[in-house]
Image (cartoon, rainbow, N blue to C red):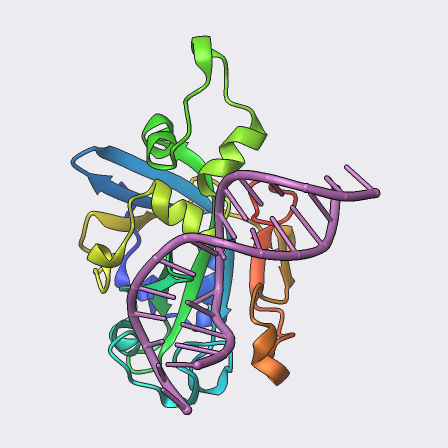
Length: 207
DNA sequence: AGAGAGATTTCCT
DNA sequence: GGAAATCTCTCTT
C-alpha cells in the first residue's frame, strides 16, 4: 500500500516537511480506517528554535520521542484539551519534527465526523467543503478525527497502525507555499521563519 | 466576518 | 504560578 519507509523521515527536516505535503496520514483502528491527504505542515527545528519544544536541548519526558529515531510520532497535549501530532524527522539524536496541521479527508469520512461530534449530512447529499473543513483542518481537529491521542505517543510510523502513504499525485515544488508558523509569537527571533508549508489553493488549509 | 472569552491540564520556572 | 505549536461558542458589525 505504498507505506512510507524509514529513509524518508531521515531526510533533513525542511526537505521532509515539504515532501509530506500530498502524502496521506492513515490510522487503522478497530472502529475502521480514517485517513487524509496532508495539505499543511510546520517544521520545528530543534535546540536552536525558540518555538520548538526541544529548544535549548531540553530532554524532558514529554519530548523524549523527538530525540529518538526519525519516523516516530511525537504527540503532545495542549490548552488543557487538545492533542497535536508531529512526525520526527532528520538524523537520529537531533530533536526536530514536523507538525501536521491540516488534512483533506480521503477515507473513513463518516467515522471522522462521528469522532468530531458532527452529524453526517442528511439524505445522501454530498458534504460541502465547509463541512469537510470541520473534520481535519487544524492540528487538534485532525487528531480527534483520526483518534490520535497520547496512546499513540512514540509509535513507529514505519511499522504500526498509524502510518503514512505515498502521494498518488505528488505536490510539485511550485505548488508549495511557505510562511511563518502559527501561534508562536513568543518565539522572538524565530517567530518569522517561513517554516509553515501548505498546498497552494487547498481549501483544507487551516487558515 | 471578526473579536473575545472559556475550557482545562501538562509542562517548566 | 503562568503560559501553552487550539477550538468552539457567543456577541457584535
